[in-house]
Image (cartoon, rainbow, N blue to C red):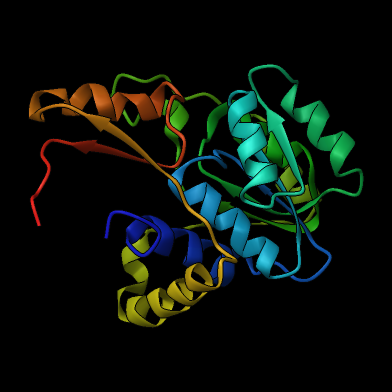
Length: 218
């Protein structure tokens, strides 16, 4: 329930397949692509026949995306100019942008959106989800108008009546090896929960961030 068959995988499933609706030959961009939701979203786009580009922080994550998760391209936002790199990899524009980050990353994706493209707003991890955080951009919303795009936001509980069917499809892809996932397991006590959660906002996690506080004997 904490992995690909839980809410993170289901969020990727509905956000990508019901809202993004990639078609064979589309170019799909996923931000935060090495996280639990983004990694699944990108793989689902690949299974739909799209060419998939993911953004992640650091060479290890970028390699995991292309070598393990099957993304076509990965952009290391710590070392590359994201907006320029997207333009290089998708000169005809991005048909579906699945955004988990917001802020400057959302702005870079919008700048490269294709005519009649779709932006799916899933998360805003760059903000830290804090009331004290200063919202940043995007400042290029006019691009949405000029390119006749759609911007769609959602929360996974919108689809609660479809959870069982979606989990069955996800499980089938996992069993076949077409869908992979990874857990980032930190070990400690309950007192370590906040520090472990903050790894998400520092971009330190690869896949699902978990804190293991005990081992059960079977």
